[in-house]
Amino acid sequence: MNSSLIPGWRTMTPGDLPSVLAIADAVHPDFPEDPAIFAERLALHPEGCRVLDHGDAILAYVLSHPWAAESCPPLNRLIGALPAPAASYYIHDLALLPTARGSGAAPAIVAALAEHAARLGLPAMSLVAVNGSAGFWRRQGFAEARVPALAEKLASYGADARFMVRDLVPGLRPSATVTSAS
Picture 1 (cartoon, rainbow, N blue to C red):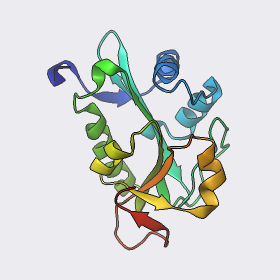
Picture 2: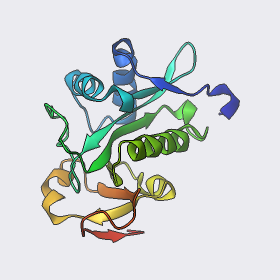
Picture 3: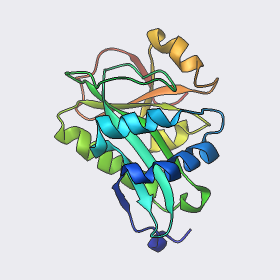
Picture 4: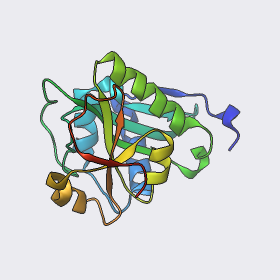
């Protein structure tokens, strides 16, 4: 897709949720999440919930929020509240329709989220890479972190799930084993 057709990311609104859910169903059919999950993440940290708006259609979304270090929320579970204090910035989901892929929109939002996390004073970002996306995340500065305590949660995300971390402030993250390739 011609990147000039991608106008950019904007803050998600509750009215965007039906489109976001449709994208989630199309992009992540093996990882369904209830509509309440999306609404809760938007309510808890609207600054981290964005959509790629193409005027007449939403082409992508991202859900992200402050979270605990070396941890990931369980798939399809309400979290109730954000941890205080938070120790990482968690990207819960980044999903693009095929027409938006290759446009530069995904690296752009990851860079914007890194700036947001840094403004919040968080030393790292984290996520669970699924559907063979670990290579994309490596190109965005993330590395696989092997955290034995996450094995059961990761299994619910599928066999290829990888917990990944990007340091924003080197040396401040706990001592998980980090590898640059897996």
